[in-house]
Length: 455
Ligand code: ADP
Ligand code: MG
Image (cartoon, rainbow, N blue to C red; front, side, top):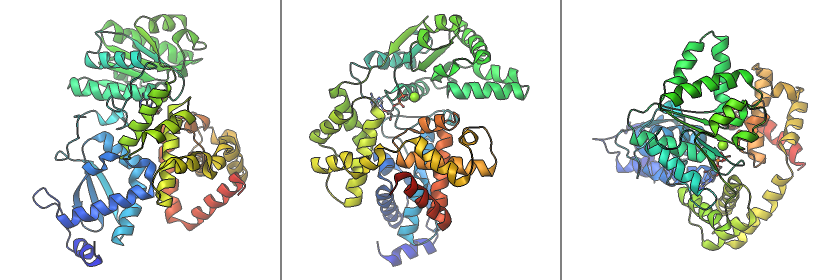
């Protein structure tokens, strides 16, 4: 793409022409996508090729997406890399806008759904690898998403962290919405349920809260172990459960342990949770892990040989999230060095310096450096306080934990006062942007990183 053609496109307010972007604009957009992939390989997806330019006038680039889940994913994860890429390619300041456009169709699934559900586009049944460790959980999720309220009610899935519970719950939402056009689905983390309950009491709007949860067709609550020791919330949840169950509505729950092992959970809830089907997810076998690595690579548009997938699967055994982390490291090294992904590169990425640096950093180390720099207390970062003097160090802490450790968004949010993953994502995006736009912030982050890594 020559500079004059870019300048031409920008100066002539090129928009969609009869529903189709001009070849020049499409070419620029392809370049922007390529650059964005290089800037942030971990958040690259194969379906980027399905995105379309709706409008491009030099200052504003509107990107059409097939569904809300895609819009949400791009906004949360890719806005920064896309913006930087667009600016580098065009040499202009570009503002991005992602929106659903009816002309952009998803590849295989029609994913109409309530935007409020906040689903992750990767977490579909298509992208879930089935093996002996999760076969029953998967089959029961398929069954309830096909005919909610008719088969297993409630469906209770439990297993350790990182084994795919949340992924399956999102997949149920996608599938149930696809099959049952008008079904009202509520999907939220248990923490969110508890927080909304508390807010409803504070605002004197308990009736509103109750009608919101007691009138749905499917209620899906993730991580119900969060109810432990929360007596009021347990009471409220008990009544919600009864109302739905008595009306034949589907209830799906997940937790890190079976109902009877959740500490301080009321007996009447334990017995209700056991009424339907309780199913466990175990750590995946070697073969399943290989298939998961291959699936994850495929979703990102990466080719990975059986040898490398096998190597990763042998190295990482317990947590599937870490399999993804390994893939991300390998991809990142391949992109920065421009090398082909081979066994040697995989070994370097997983055992080399990057891993060695990351391995010994804990979130506590990060919190220590951040609290001492800003002269705040850890309890403040973990509290509900929202003053600027606390919010900024908290967000910086989240950003650094995300970049220097392998903790998930959920784990980071949990450590910093039980915040949910979208809060952490928002913080990371905000600090990332500040880093790009404010040299002082950039210097501060470099300094803190140095102290944390003892570099
Ligand atoms: P949990 O909720 O049990 O802690 P998640 O659902 O968040 O775990 O899964 C962690 C990561 O592992 C997600 O990226 C998810 O897509 C992936 N994952 C887990 N199980 C599978 C599977 N069987 N196939 C594909 N990906 C999986
Ligand atoms: Mg989960």
